[in-house]
Length: 329
Image (cartoon, rainbow, N blue to C red; front, top):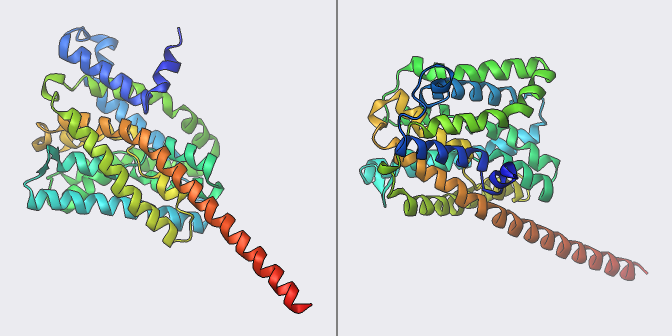
């Protein structure tokens, strides 16, 4: 049986498939895994532990040994994407009572602010250059719930104790410290990160009941299209403004698979989000799938446009060179 291949055919499959399996079990067989011991530890109650492991692993990939130009472009793309998410989420919260077309402030903030790193690296590796791929290093700061919590608190949209904030970033910082001190540690955890993702997704799904999210589908698709169009545009502009080709910016127009874990993490820190976290989770998961389909299309379009512009410029330069030689003779 080709189970793994089938899972990988689904956009963000390692995250999305276990997430929905967990939701199905929790909805229709809620007591199936509640038998104590190691089995129950791998159900919903194990989610905080698995998430902590994942945040540590992500932290080990944050290296300081990166060229300044990559850092500048990557930071610019990061700022463009996150600031856009903040502005839209804040506007929805302040002027629309926290809801637009069934999309909450939480879902919008999470989906728009976190880029699918695996897809970004795959697309820039094929259609970009080494510098394009390297811009993801500062963008990896988006990973996990910390930035979302930070800006929700800063905007007055959440009440999260400072110690809870520290507890979220501590595993990331610990991983970053060890990853920068020892390349072997960074390589080890970096290559094994995918092993943790299905467990994180499954335990997250075990905390969600599908009966509460049946209306999330259409809104999730709309959210994905909005992420693709809005963040794609601003990231391309930021990338080109900072000297890039726009390919890296186009590749950042997605929602990360792990972003589906963020609404629950926020709700754990601020219980006022408990009611909307399940719906936000499914909407973000839908955005993951939609952008996984659309982002490669946008990146390919940008790649073809860049190469056409370069070819046209080369032709103009060749023509000018020939005219210069003729006039000199």
